[in-house]
Image 1 (cartoon, rainbow, N blue to C red):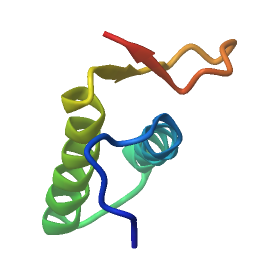
Image 2: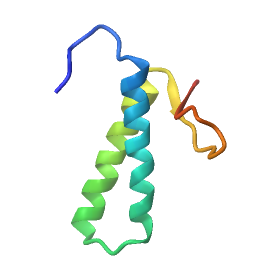
Image 3: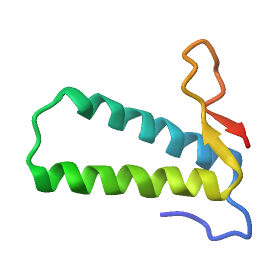
Length: 70
């Protein structure tokens, strides 16, 4: 799945950020309570990976940077 390293590279965090943004599309879709819970947990875990590396997701559509330094 990945190469273990001392630091997660920026590109990996950028890919994860794009994945988190895809979860926003689920907001308007019908889901069971359990599936919604699981999807929310997955999203929160992925966002936690980004934050624990000192970044936050950039939701500005005009920017080409998926993450910003905290």
